[in-house]
Length: 307
Image (tube, rainbow, N blue to C red; front, top):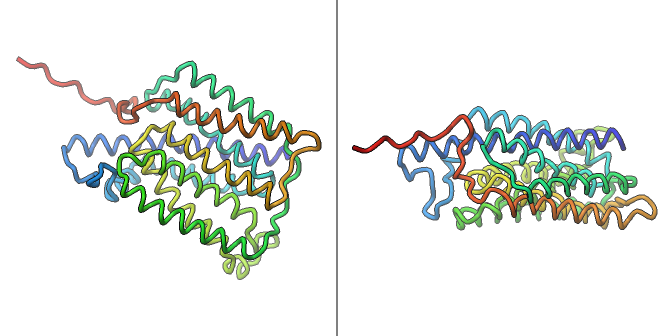
């Protein structure tokens, strides 16, 4: 349990730091596009074009953030096999706290008292969850579950990508939520994945859950990038938190045998609800306009004096 918690906390730190660095890279790219006074970086509906997203992805900040995301993914996958999903996913989703705090320095965002209170609620909720968590369930699931995970991942990620393109600049929260659902599917997929223990490559490659993980991870990363480009970093991350926490937690309890300690079920439920509510509150009270603040070292030049 302790090793699993430490692993989940490390994954959370990687994800949170990565999100902020990716936001810095996305905003730097957006400022450069704006400086060119070009509409090539947006679609007809005001959303980021594929080319602008690609340009954001090749900034050094975004690349370092992506590396941290991959490290966080590996650590999170390990934690998902050692802890109940309602605990591992919630601890990992606490990366919003890391994101909010680092945003002060790297994005020039000032947190208000309600945001600090919300962060405190998340931390308290994590203590409750750690206290109430019991043993994780097994990874045994019907083969049909593996196929359903793949089908749902394809529908959500494919349909979500189309919806985000159609909604354009209004899609920030939707993109964040869908990316969270994608990352949540990764947690479920890792838990039920065949061919891991003991390792068997043919069995691994034949498991539909592996391809659900790959699709959800790839498209989820794209949608997260879009959310960071067009919305508040805290708002996008909070939507991601809801997506990657609620559904996997429910699936873990209902289908995979995750449980709390005897007599602590109410503590686990309370901690889970407080964690989600606290994360959403950070977004609710957060920075209203993600594009209004440039990175601390990327201040826009002041207009020249007239006359």
